[in-house]
Length: 505
Image 1: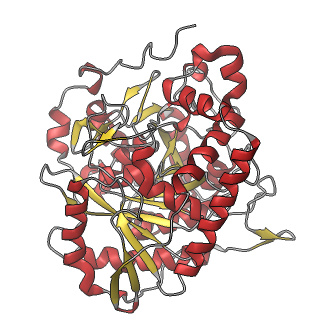
Image 2: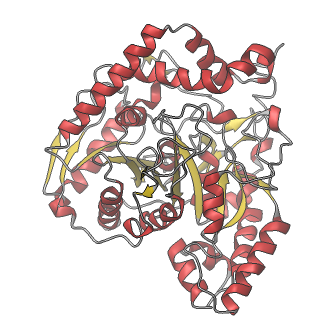
Image 3: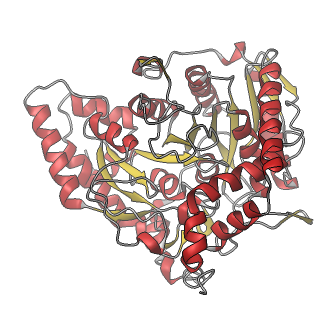
């Protein structure tokens, strides 16, 4: 089988062929390294690689196959890791000049779980500085371009992972999500991104132990691939207070997510909303969403306009987001402000203006939204919305500050569709759903019931299969030949736009 053909296989197909000794983990690694060599210059998705270590791991995986050993779930599969997560022996920069040469001596817990499941850590994927912002550009590695138009944003902050998946550089990749950081790039790049319930994928790095807004999650090209990766990521870690255990007993098992059961979408009661009642959704996205809903609503038992009451969402998210940035970056801001970029500084300075009364109000508002979501799901199985308020903009625009003439107060206001769901703590997944008039991917967000991660994944797989058969709703694929001939993204105007921004002493 050719290198190109190997990269086009799903992760499940790759793993099946490895288990049958039909392909070698070494050949699979070589295929993905060749794909990186072919197109990465145009999009800058993979920013660090330790080929020597990856090849040694691939050879060890190959030897295990030859010996007939029992193989773990992800055995021999190359995986990309977002550059916010520590990888032993492989540079981890967080997109920040402070850590430009940092090489961890240990994996973070999530990466360790993936290695234990047999994954080969192929490389690190680009992210904005400390994950701040839904545009993947930083002063260490520069911008990551959209695989359908490298001059446009791939969103973020898990943009490098999404682009690497869309272009076949890796079959699986990790992401993280606060205000949509893995859902946003999934929508912009035509792949699948899953925000799990808080604690399902534990993080020992959680600075605010009981802060449910930030989660780790899987990204892939198909729902079954994503579910297989989640099965390896979901675990127990007593260092994370949100980890899913009761008195040390693990509450989720691998079999809950992989393999997925087959569900019939004709049994689903669906609510559809273009804006959750408060998001500044653009006219273009509203029209795209209306077109797609008209095409697919017939696959469901019912598809009714509606959404939970989101009163207070903007206020709650602003304060809670700022709280997280103060916890993580206040010391650096106080002693070395010049080492931080504009998005991080904006969040910290916003946080410094809030009071304890503001914090109490924000937590109260989030609790109210959580309860209203629960009540809403008594009548519905799923909520479907657009994934993003606007279609991909140029990456030289750090964030949209205006939508259809409406000025936005913050650089993250345009992320209201994903961050509103974040406040609910419900799981959510983004599926590709065709393209817009410029050939750029359009994504839909599907929200499941509280704690219903396994159900949501099975439902999303049923919807994914149905969308593939509906005109204008299938997953788009970028033109790799065009990307291979494109100029290096670092030669495009604006590629060094963050080299000095926000770094005056």
